[in-house]
Image 1 (cartoon, rainbow, N blue to C red):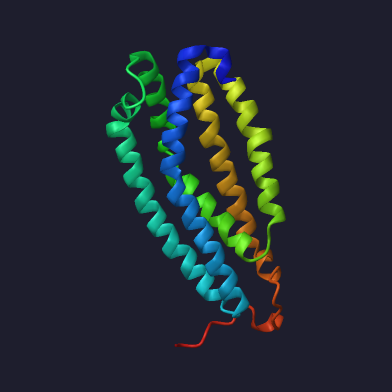
Image 2: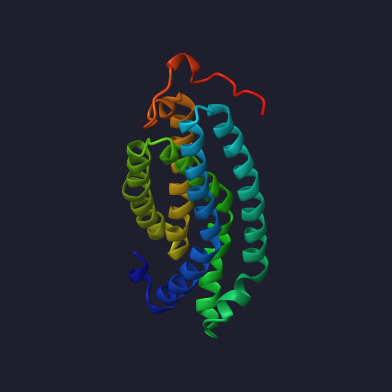
Length: 198
């Protein structure tokens, strides 16, 4: 889809995507760390700590994502300028960064929700949600919007997929089915019991 809009858009996307990948890496790492934390606490039958860990990690990721969004909005053109001096490429890439970075909080929350489910051993539903977000939403929406908004429409397809991914994952998380996916099984009656004070 990007290739349809010519060399400046291709160059801008290539540069902005690299900056974007670097900016989202910590949120992905938080998700992986949370996955380990969840697995350990479910194995220890401390479900309440999973919720507390998720909330604490959400707070940290939200703060980080907000900071990165401010940096992208304020210094996006400067960051693009490190890779090219073509003003058109810089402007197109900055447009990408402004749109996508505005949803870094959503991206981070989505990865944390996925990390929680993976840590609980519930990997199938997150996989289907990811596939649906990418192929059923992101690609078609990017194509459709690009026909009406130009390359800007491509960029909007990314956060649309993130928002759906977060909402769908959160709804599944609220069902509580992931609590029953643990490799180490505990008495069902004790699954939601509060942990003892340490």
